[in-house]
Picture 1: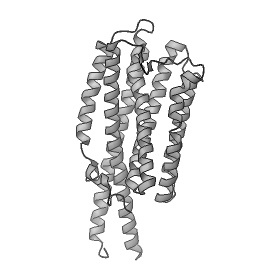
Picture 2: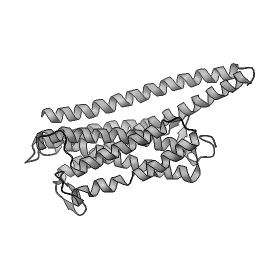
Picture 3: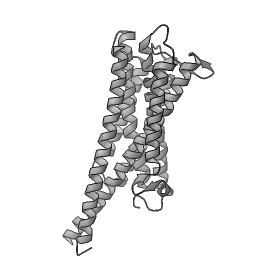
Picture 4: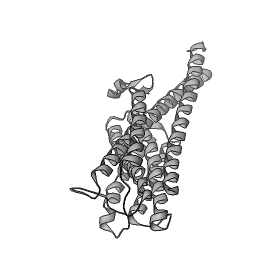
Length: 243
Length: 46
């Protein structure tokens, strides 16, 4: 089965580009600009933490985006295992790579926030540790995807690994309740610990990050599709040279 | 304010650099693909 043959996803693609890619880019730019205005001007300064609390508006969206993209990776991996269409594997790789980028950003911004608040860049807190484990899981996933195995075998192994890896996300979410943690629990179902203006700023930033994450996935998917076609053309030329 | 500046600069610099890196890689791959397609068309055995 070739990469694009018979796929329901072909309607989403045009000349190896995801339809609406440009629109996603512009939407992200508008969302990010509005998000920055809300985070720095509209939202009030937090009484206890002061100005450093504004890191919250990029830290939480980065973490959310990482979880969302690893979720997308799992869905694409399940779809790949069911259909064996390589396009699903390409979507999973794209989501995985961008997910790792956003996990790195969540860890880095958490560390920068931790320095003035906890007086340390890093502590082995359950939430931080389980997030670092998540980062290692999906870096390992990308290593599998970059390995020299055959397309089918590599994609199958990576899909299984990617699906198992998602188990860490509910553990991260529950870690502050399950173990003693210094990481604050700001968002709990049925209870809001922040004023409405902060919640609005956070929601807009989350939406902007999600749009930008999807835009990056679209560009990375294009990379995967182009690389696949280049590989096929090289194989054709090599075959022609031999035969 | 230093930590806020550091965090925002790090995030946006990393995301923009990554975005430009992906776009540049796509352009390089598209050029390579066009050259290979021409080579396949020129090949008399194809």
